Image 1: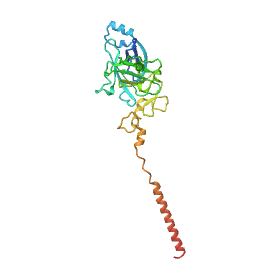
Image 2: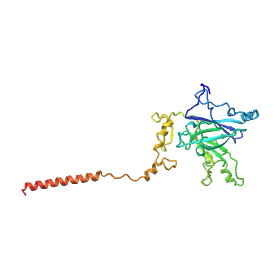
Image 3: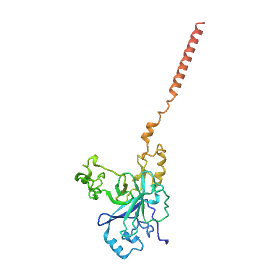
Image 4: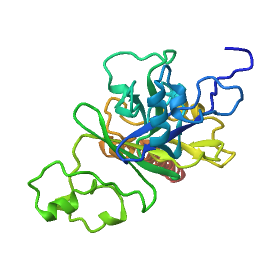
Length: 305
């Protein structure tokens, strides 16, 4: 690396989504690790990032894949600093033709330590686990081996999934509701009856930005999750927001994906009643008794008794 090259540490991080013309394969591509400018740079085509690609494969890949969109996430270099409300994902690629993204998993669920200083044949990034303003749902459909079967980015009515039926013995009604994941918030899913909605555990959900957020500040929402803000009175950096809000969580020894403030209110006993009114009454009574006693003594003295 020369002195003219940079590593971009910007919080917002772009990911290219390349799509195969058959509509069944995707390739998620991160920017160049080292850049000649302070902005993010991509290869003209993702295949240019691969080494030792046979000429025939190179030509086919360039012809078969097109750039579908660019989404914005959180830079994976901050993955170990942002935890609440975020998910750290890793997508690995096929190292040979057709060079598509074949699998995805959450790094936090991997039983071994992954170093940020190691280069991998894939892309990692941080995204929100929950919907926040300005984000869209990215849903990865995968099999039991964590291999990607299909991807949906839910932000327009045109983003319609077309999955092949996995069971040939389905009746026509079931096939209609199994044509795409019917739990996703597509317009065509509005009339799906609740008993037809099925959400297996083979999905990975992430919320991504469709465009680079213009917000330069950060604030914590009601769940103590740090989100972009335009208010200069808020935190100047994401890390400042995280460090100043994680310790505000209630019931830290119980993890329920919520800050537990309402639950904490219910579990806490009522505050002890103040003894000040009781003491005040005693003092008042004592004072009155003293005054009465003094008055009685004065009367007796006046009468010469």
